[in-house]
Image (cartoon, rainbow, N blue to C red; front, side):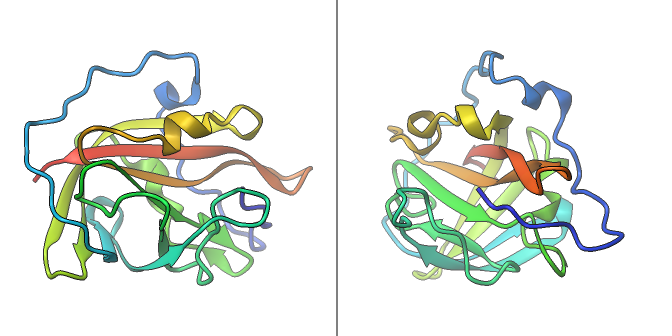
Length: 185
């Protein structure tokens, strides 16, 4: 989990929908269309038109404590090398900072996304993997379901993860925003 202070005078990032805040809520039935998976190919950039995001995608692994590393540049996203590549069969995981000491970062606007919003990942092989947001969920950091979030899937899926619920007294984020998306147009 990222624990950085907001820049002076900076507004917190957009809040996810209220339905995303309860980890006890039941997931929606999958909207996953039948589609063929793409072959493996590293992601190079991610675009989310609704929040005017287009940024480079770095590659990260796990930190010594077992958590997924974050991108070195807060204005970039990062694909977790321990997951499938976006568009391939399985759960591709992309992480990003919500902010940094200098202000909003790459995933700052993710809380504004809603089911049905589109995003895309440009890949090294020249193809673009298109996705549709299916679910938005905020998980408390102390109850983060790693297996559920990072676990395998039998079909292509994209999972985006960033921090949420800034606690100004503790100077840390209390939760993680997790967005899952399925192949779409």
